[in-house]
Length: 298
Image (cartoon, rainbow, N blue to C red; front, side):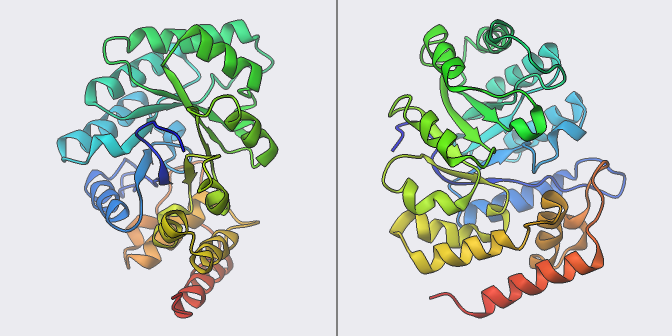
């Protein structure tokens, strides 16, 4: 098990949207508190599920600030600060450090593909330098299907050697468990988080620090039982809920289910380029969820 602060069940929390297509801060704070009270050890704010790259730098900073000013427990929060522009990434990461987030989750600069490792080291180096006073822990965000730029194992080792004590973990959204295991093997103190709760029973053995999952927005209570006690019945139910989204748009689907769970259609709003799920997908997701929950997992 990693000895870093963040571990366990972490929801890649959705960002509610108001009817003007801006981040809905009151809804966001209410949802965050609910998640932390209902199974989440921590939250990943403004990640892919949080639609971070659909917001401006100023919008992202405003959401980040709201977590601080509304008294959310900053020691339980990491925040996505990666950007295509190094200047934007510096501004966001510095803001996260000044607010006291427990870590920054950093996508590589994702527009140019095939860039050299030297360029990626320089990018991370700029973020390390910008937060030297606070020594903000940096977690790498590996999502090559979307970013097109991987954090490969040798590069991770180089970053850890170049910036001792600052590159503390990685979220793996690739779905490649062989990759996740190879990253976890870099060092026992390197906190590796697969993006699926399906890993939680394995993670209890110490290989992974937990999971950072989009679907933990809607099944964190079950995930927590699997993580804390090894409850395989709860684990199977959590995975069954995750499978409801296979072949369907994940972020709009999760937000649709949040709206259903909380009886609040506002939580289902998404920002372009996302669009609401189809009526058929909505019925399948919500009906499937209700059926799983109706089994009263003991």
